[in-house]
Amino acid sequence: MFRKPKRKIYFLIFVLPTLAAFLIGFVYPFFNGIYLSFCKFRTTSDAVFIGFGNYVKAFQNEGFLHSFWFTVLFVIVSVVLINLIAFFVAYALTLGIRGSNVFRTVFFVPNLVGGIILGYIWQYIFNGILQYYGTNLALNANFGFWGLIILMCWQQAGYMMIIYIAGFQSVPHDLYEAAKIDGAGKRQLLTNVTLPMMMPSITICTFLTLTNSFKLFDQNLALTGGAPGVVSQATGTTVYQTEMMALNIYNTFYANQNSRGVGQAEGVIFFVIVVIIALVQLYFTRRKEVQQ
Amino acid sequence: MAKVAAKAKEKPVKKKQTVGMKILTVLFSIVSIFYVAPVFIVLMNSFKSNAAISRAIFEFPNADSFQGFQSYMTGMFHGNYPFWKSIVWSFFITIGGVVLILFCTSMCAWYLQRSNSIVCKIIYYFCIFSMVVPFQMVMFTLSKTADNLKLTTPWGILIIYLGFGAGLAVFMFSGFVKSIPVEIEEAADVDGAGPLRTFFGIVLPIMKPTFISVAILETMWIWNDYLLPYLILDMDYKTIPIHIQYLNGSYGHTDTSAIMALIVLSIVPIIIFYFACQKYIIEGVVSGAVKG
Image (cartoon, each protein chain N blue to C red):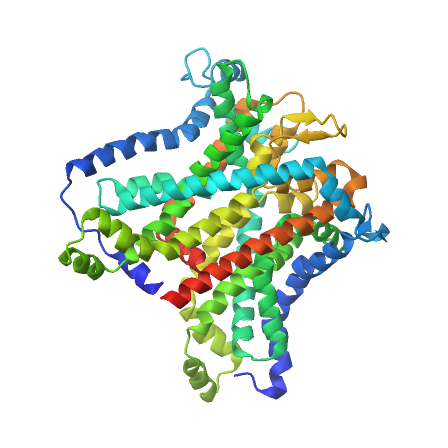
């Protein structure tokens, strides 16, 4: 297609605009970020190389460790709940019950609303309810945790439902016919035909919810903003009880100019964890492809 | 994927409603009411006075607390940064960003796929890699880079969106280009059409479904994005999520009623968007999930 003599011109026309923006918007910040995680700095120009110091500090940072375990717990609970709900709802909606289209719309639309706005909507609702008990979201970490879970189920279940519905609809009908002729009951149809055929959708949805929950930022910021903060007795630093990793990194960066290097190191650690999740996903997707 | 889409398009066969299915319809109706309740409560409160909101958020407006569209007027047109400006900037950045991404990345993806050079392969794999990297990892260096290059205006941020959003778009377009037979393009080449004419006359029309999917996914992302524009844009420019967060985050007097009115106003375009392109949104979500 692209013959030699004019090749360079076409490269400039077709690729260069995207490539230039990509270098500015991703490649340079990415490598600069990795470099800065080994430096002490306030702005990018006064960086001094200090080796692994930031990483050591990051792993000693109580707030960071707390946010890590908080995130892990949140991810486990939310992934299980969202997928169970979405799977069940999708199954029910493909049975052909009356009003399926209306329900599908109602469950899906929260997805299109931004995390900040959703966070505040739910903050009003939760605080309105908790008001009757003389408390509010910012006082108890448990409220913040379950509030965030409810919010995420409310938002994400509809999205996953759409993917599951597409999965259910792609199961070939003759498989059911064949199984019925062989005398399979309803239950056997579900466990031996539907579930195996649904595995690709289940893998996709599991990893989508996993990465979404893990990288959660907007909802966390808007709903609780990390509150309540508890002053740790050992080190005297304030540990925000409902702060997830993304928010913790953000706060480490912008709340205190002296800890920017630590914030950048935490960002790199965060990135490494996300890459590991992605690689595990790739492994599962590939394995599935071999089987089929 | 084409198979799934085809199945989804089939009219659902009207099934006889069994007792179980009727129960499900009733159950889902009740759940749906709870599902829309949060948004409804915010809508209801946007017509009430602040005192009434903090007293009882779940009460319907009455003669005492009802204040009509007053909150909408204050929110939209008063204050040192009226909300209508944020709406204009949100629309500008979303539409501009999506158009730029579609135009540049489709060209880029086609060239990358059709040219076998090593440089192109490297760019392609870097694009895929960029999808994995969480924003917190690059946020600081990216905002500094944007500062240095004076990209902190609504025009400049379009370039950042092109760079940071290139990954997903290039990936999805490339996936589609792979499925287009090269022979079509070679035929055009033999007939004397240059690469530019081949692309705009032949490849672009074929890519229409992917264009729509990418457009939907990028719109949902940019419209709701909070942290990236917040870190990059000058203080003179706000988008809707930044504005909502700004109103809530400011200490002291917060006008809850006005915020609720603005939340309602920011949800309205999303609902219009959903009903206008419902079919495409569902397809975009499914194809984005399967490929991503």
